[in-house]
Length: 316
Picture 1 (cartoon, rainbow, N blue to C red):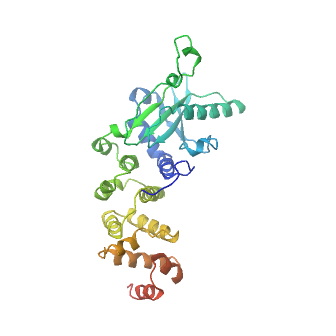
Picture 2: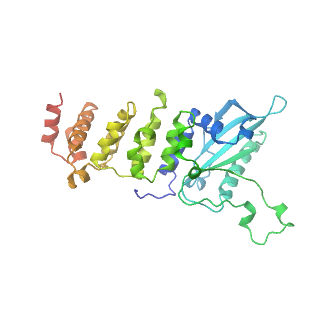
Picture 3: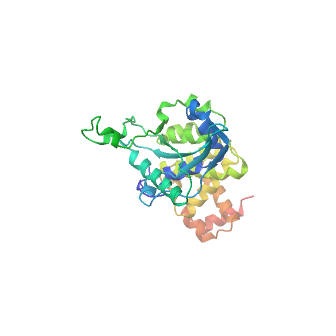
């Protein structure tokens, strides 16, 4: 896995989480299929909205995904605005309450300043790590709290979505949408062999044309977690269908242009000849069609300009 500071505001875990769960279909499917039925039945999901704009402080933005939903709750006689605060974790944390409470207070403070009614907030913690999540209460953060002190402490719960408790079969039996892609990707993000073996499932075709950018976010997340050799890259490309195939090729090109060799040189060094030539040839042609010059293309692949010219000359 590539090294990166987990405290960066745009950590790949966070970027993919925000991209996936900010999709309206994913949000709807997550709420209706994952959250408790007794709670969901009181939601008026026709009013479901994804809130744009961050409520995170600079410090919180280093640790939390900023995905916020708003929905009407209740019957015709009384409705309450419900906001879903979602945070993801890849490693256990004893007390996530501080982060939730800080975010809640920031939302309520803004509502008060704007003379809006305060809304209940449902914190949802999305966990996709390997270690067991040991759930503890807010009051456990304090020592020597007895029944006389307990009433003076904040008291609230969060809803835990622990992917380790969901089998692949359970995930695949969900409604066919990008929620399945996202959950499988997060659950197996450390397992390169699983990704290569199940790449068709992970990239199942579930999105409409205007949503295809989610496939790119998904693939960027996977390539951040793993380095693929040229043969493995070609294996992925051969297995997936359009439009995913086109998206992956375009993403490879973008990574190359940023100076990331995406394993091609490593594959050559290891003597993995099969499939490498095809990968280089196809990508060189696509880069040329997009208007990149010979210097850029040759430097990306560490091949001579003459080699590039030869590929382009024989592309037909």
